[in-house]
Length: 24
Image (cartoon, rainbow, N blue to C red; front, top):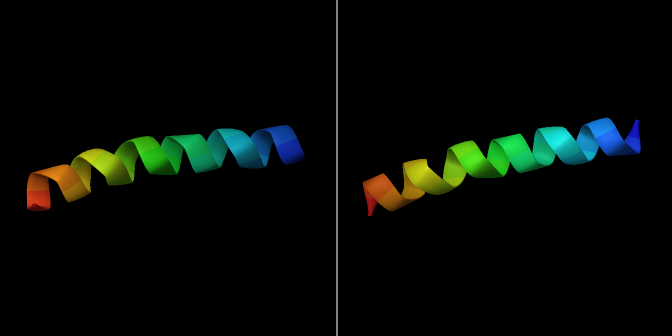
């Protein structure tokens, strides 16, 4: 469960980071 949560968090971060960079 913890491992899966970490994977989702990493995926979310990978998706959010580029989005913010493009916005700025």
